[in-house]
Length: 201
Image (tube, rainbow, N blue to C red; front, side, top):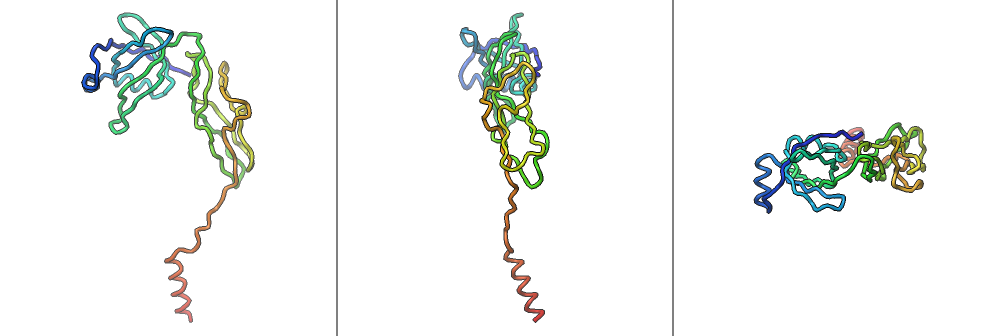
């Protein structure tokens, strides 16, 4: 379930690409907070603590500014994959007891029948849950399933209090026969065989 990390933030007063680059050099991440009809609020967040906190993309955060606390969830995370850093965050304000829809990873348990393989059609699925009790994953079980079978939305195992926002007959995974590709004889093997037959002759 969601952890709640408190992060001290400051109001962002300088804007533009130059100001954003300077903030990142200073160990800060520019962020914008949206939600509940209020105007967007621009913040600067400590990079190291924030990056650790949002390793789970559905992490519940408490941003603290001037003694006031607000619960927020990451809405969008802009990452720099070369530097392995976060460039920008969009956050959405939530309240205790409020239900929100988030994408949650699908965890696969069990092994399909021998001679088969499974294909996960959806790596993540939308789930409706309490903002303070968001699951990190949901589970499907493929134990013993035969070729041609499907795992549907109705088969997804959900934590108490959460709901899958997909139809019961929505296909999450499929089971198919394991095919073995015959690559044939390689060129080198063919030459060695021909040479051996010639020598024997």
